[in-house]
Length: 433
Ligand SMILES: Cc1ncc(COP(=O)(O)O)c(C=O)c1O
Image 1 (spheres, rainbow, N blue to C red):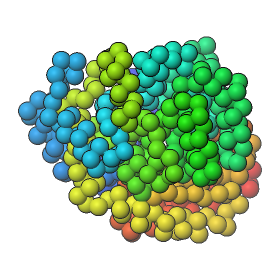
Image 2: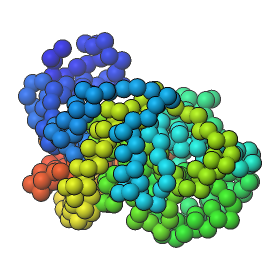
Image 3: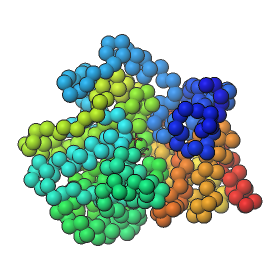
Image 4: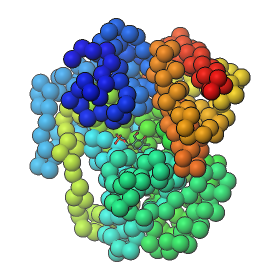
């Protein structure tokens, strides 16, 4: 199959969108993607899902995976451990998350968040509080595709509807100044003694890019944790490993989670690997209680995934890339703001590190602004990611830019320029009806 665009009726794949003819990508180099017909696309979204933070074709990461595969690529962690897993856990805690004590690996963000939920539940059960099971989380969020993680979002119409019978009835809060009083209402509704965890992204990824509640919210959340005894789980599947300009985003906030997950940037697109990290007191509850946390997926902690994760961590640390993201991020945000400031479709531009979001003004659903933005960007040879959340009534369409940390200044400038041009095209086409 070397067709440059593949439609549903030309493939044995069960595609995600049956009406889309998918460009066929053959290879990548740095921030450039090449289709089978030789088109060049500038990747402003780290592979489209905020994953490839070291760009495509990073030789040292490929070599690390290859070297490990030559020794041994896979065995099951139920019976054994391995040096890459041991070293990656140690390095994560030493370098990236010194506030945490223990690490459990998985393969995807969904698995990591599912594991975090199960760990929060196990913590309470092992401490003799089995009534604690409910979770409170912000509605405008995405935490994964498994039924337990899908239940955490409040985006009913766009994400949950067909699966509602399978989903636990968790409770949700909105964004902004009212979030804290909504949290109090939800605690009251659930009964504070039944709440296991508050689950959220410290800085939002795709669902509300680069948004973080005001400091007052975090301080209030911390006070309520102390008062009511629930745990705080942060989903840093997107923001962990440097994306927001610090190793973990919570390091920019006046609060630390009890449990934190990370994924995407940990393998940086070279291996599917995610991780759940927890503080000492969470580990202690299991240590003093049942003495097992028996949740595993076949690929958890596999040698090839961990060797790859270790090489990624070493590259981030050794090349000072988290610092580059922190220092270069503000200019990228300023440039993006000036590129779209005259565009009447733009409601707000936000950014933290190399995680940037453009909220569009509220437009009728049938205008499909998200699809128009992605198409217009591709017409300009640019990959960005857009989501549509208006239908749930929380926010408008969101466009996400999340370049590789290794992008050159020139490439970043080109991303901004092409994005400004693409959004201008969308504004023009919408004006024409
Ligand atoms: C914030 C957040 N959490 C969890 C996930 C789920 O990760 P995965 O798709 O690797 O299961 C995603 C995926 O986009 C995400 O953005």
